[in-house]
Length: 505
Image (cartoon, rainbow, N blue to C red; front, side, top):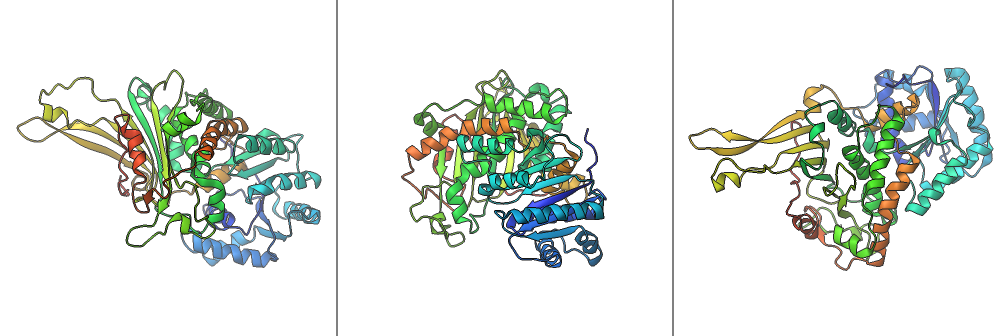
């Protein structure tokens, strides 16, 4: 289904930034320790800090110690450090790219990387056009064929709205072929997200029920207890809809809603995901947006804890930027027509949990005759927990012991941690390996990115035309704004509670 990782050099632009320190380098180090990196593999960092190779290696050892699962041993680090190189310079300086070209040739010779290149843009999105054109001008890209290969990894956000996403894609398309571009979304590297397709298409008992005839609604939740953690300037520009919904949560929705692909080939899967984005029911005016969305912004946590969003450094004292959103979304196709997908995500909430809840329809007729019994029969719920403590649970009705017929509710649980001993792979581990393999199923394609923005942009526009008047409208440490409960309750439904997750849930 996928090939082994190929020899290559991974050139990381922004190699001393937060993303490289917190995510990329710890993931790469774990792959090295597990023996999952190809023998012919090296990492070349590029950033403005005036580091030598040795200073860069020491800086990254500190990062792996701080953000990794456990501090690297001397022996482990020695083998990994031998793969690390660095070039300092500003991205506007063409001489930096000349030096990078020379370093790449030397690394090819030393590590037998066969001229294969992966360029990872771990920078501000505003630098993307500059970097791709600098790579082109320095003749560092093989656009003609795949041997040696050239690949570009682009971090989110992929634009700020439909127009900017289209413009960015045009800039990249002028330099790279689409099959060379890997738009990374780390949520797609999480085990339970990947398991959605296997769970659906490897189990004959579920797929026949995966439609409007049996499912009442779907909930997708990404709740965080943390605030913006000092990223006020970034969040003021982004907000929760761009930060979480347009990419992470719509990607999850597409995996839940997509039709069966013809194969597990990357484009076969991505074709079906794009069909879902095209089937999302559009909002035609601001009234429709306001009727189907709820915005929120957290205020101070009672009794201390998190301060209000508007009190964070870099945040306007009267900021209208939402830190919470709930939406009611429809997929207008044969399988899902009329079935609501409820999405909610926010910061400063009572509990951290990312999960998908598939709620099946109520039984059509109660056999037990007693109103008090029938009223306690809950619908079946399938819960896919993405984080923390990845796992799956299925709820169903049972008879409680005793002389009378009393219906109880039980859950069967599967836990990744309990079933598979050891640490769960980091999301970036899988995505980095797939980039080396050239397997793009877990990466966003240009058309799917633009279709997702096509759906989200009218929401952003309607919100801009109708700024909130009640912010802050929920306390940090709560379950979010009361209006979010009203959104789903108006349909006769309720949110799945934000229960504390456990390793066996």
